[in-house]
Image (cartoon, rainbow, N blue to C red; front, top):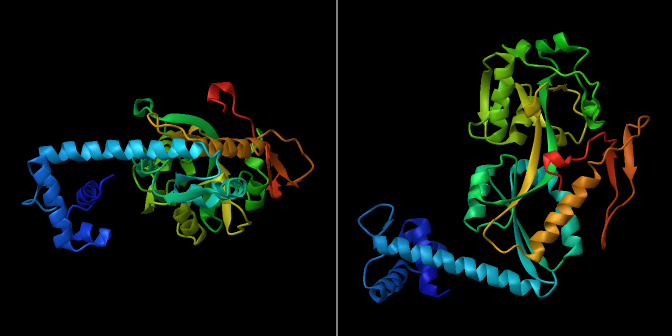
Length: 358
């Protein structure tokens, strides 16, 4: 891409010449001269300089659209050329929420970097809807999402499932109604909530319990409101936060109850009681999502295959009724041996064909 195009696109992104000059490490006069030169070649202005922030003219909108098309072609060219090296070089941008990046992706990323050391892997963190927008705008190569939208024309491959549990500080008085239903953190680590005989609850008794919920628009917020609607109660919302991990840490501090993913428990937390929720909305199926219009590189395919293989192995129905813990000395993939994992004994069910098994 020509330097002038890069400069104009940066001005468009920043909304001002001063911010763009700072980002490009140029003086503002030098940047203005470069943009004016391009405008002279086009024969009309690209920016309405009377607006703050800057707005594109009609010619500017066309110019930016063509720049984005050039960027897309350059990215595809780089991907296809890198594919000729058979994964010895390349670049992969993976987008995930804080929850996904902290709890789900680390072992897969470690395995990927071990198998493909020549691939530069960038991990981007943002909200789930922001990540979908970034994918559509070619800012990332793949992400994860549990809210399918057939109209977005994105490639989706079912890859991962979690269960939403209710986490309540143990000193809350509401727990006295559920002494036979509550799960300890050790029970959750042993995956007892996956036992068909494990008792579940609805939320009728939690009318007065303070809740820490995620902000509106979040997938788990929608599911939380479904739980309350099914119980016929209006929640007592004491706090709203944007991150699932934050809500759990606040709950552990005794501020309120929170909805969490089963994968978030990695250690014993005796200060908390946990409950299996009697609702179909408590099960979430995540897709690996890639652009439907872009070339799918070997680096992307290899990451998808590795992720699906990893979570397929630890989602197989394992029957070890006399063991709370299962030691897997090595997990072996084609051409790769993962470090040994120390995992709770699992009683998960493989994804069925009706659920879109990978």
